[in-house]
Amino acid sequence: MIGVGATLALLTSFYGPGFNGNLTANGEIFNQQAATAAHKTLPFGTSLKVCYKGCETVRINDRGPFIGGRQLDISLGTAVRIGLYNRGVDYTRVTRLS
Image (cartoon, rainbow, N blue to C red; front, top):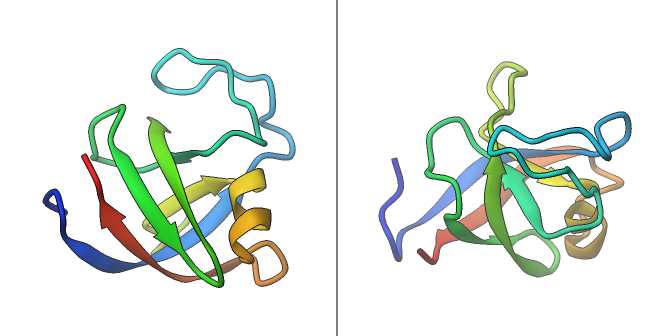
């Protein structure tokens, strides 16, 4: 999908409320404040730099999103820190770091 070093615009949303404390697809406990994300196919542990108004490096630890057209789900905390929280869903600039 996206090779190391490649940058794409991905339709990104956030999740957290209602999922905090649940298990993620890789077996970790979901922390809605952590710098983590869900993607349908990228390997667990993949690092992505996600930019909107600001940028943050996240680690893939879950699968999703499962709402039509969305390509990346970031944690609530990451959405707040990069400025996506109030918008909810929008395109972000995503660079694969590993």
